Each structure stands twice: as C-alpha cells, then as structure tokens.
Length: 259
Image (cartoon, rainbow, N blue to C red; front, side, top):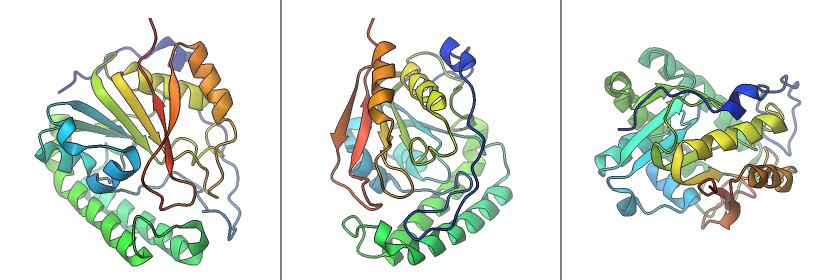
C-alpha cells in the first residue's frame, strides 16, 4: 500500500481554497447542490464511467479521491487491487457516516425524481434501479469502513492537498467533484486539484463527469487544459460508454507530467 504523508506540492500550497459558496436556487433544470453530497457508486458503475477493466487493475495501486460512500475500494480490494480511498469525512464514526448517507441519499433521490429530464436511462433502466445500486454501494462501503479505516484504506484528506508521495499510485480516480461543483470551487482550485491528482499518479488520472449540475459542459475546460499543459501535464477528453446524468458520457484523462 502506498506510503502516507508526504509534503504537499508547492502549487497546492500557494493556490487559494474554494470560492465562497453561492446561495442555491431551486430550479427544475439543474440539481441543487448547496454542499458536496456524500453519495456513492459501485465498482461496476466506476468501470463504466471510467472505462476500466477490473482484471487489468489486479496488483495495481489505485486511489479513489473524494470517494464518499462508494464501494469501489471495498470491491476492488476483493479482486486483488491495492485500492485506497480518500474523503474529508473519513475521520467520522461509522454511525455518523451512516446518518450522513441516510440524509444525503434521501435528499438526492428526491431531487432525481423531481428532475427526471436530467437523466438518461442507458446505464440504468429506471431511477429505482439506480437508487438500488447506489444504496448497495453505500452498504458495502459502510461494512468495509469500520475495520479498514484503521489500516489506512480510508484516509481523511481533501483536494488540493493529498498526503501521498509523488507517483505513489498507478491510477488515480476522481468522480463527481471537479466540474460538477464549479459554483463552489473556483478555477484556481480546479487547476491545483488537477495538478495534485497528477502529482500522486505515476500513470493516468481519470476525472468524471465533465458537466455541471445542469448537464452543461464545464465552461473553463479548455482553459484548464491549457493551464495544465503549461505545467507539463498532458490531457485528453475521452468518451466512455456510459451516460446516466445528462452529458456524462466523457472523462478527462491526465497523463504523467512531462520531464
């Protein structure tokens, strides 16, 4: 398992934190996300929206950033993957996280039913099927969390500072944080977050989705890729065979930093 606690990258130290939260306004054309939701997904769904082959990950070190109650780490470890998850809430107790799952899931699924036009039923046949899958993810996470948080599998950390050595992981994943919360996190934060993800990866970084809460593409994506390129971090937008939230059919792939 990759070693914990390394000095943060200089860029991350200099970069301002998140922008001040903007008041949420009720809308039928966008999800209302007044705070980052504690919402999880399964290994199967990760494989679809990140274009992963679980068999190819065996014996690889994989980091899931802003993992929430996703079951990717629990399921991947059973398949021989050296998986680690980070989230700012991983210092909380099992009981506290269970309560957070209960509240955030109720709020999110209520919105999903009210705003069905924001969803495409290609990856799931119905919202009920999606809810069942997401709840299964949270159940698997909670069953795995209590015993493994002490063993360093679930680490309290948040972007743009990750407590790992440079190149500690073969693959780094980050789902449903960047871009979808662009109203809460400013452009400088996005640059610092992407640079930090690239710092701890010796291979690819995969980020999904590339849209905001209304399904519109992140407006600053080209500018972001330009800034990363100037830092020596190549990137590409890659299509995936997945779309549940409208517009979520692609991911941003960051390559290892150029010498």
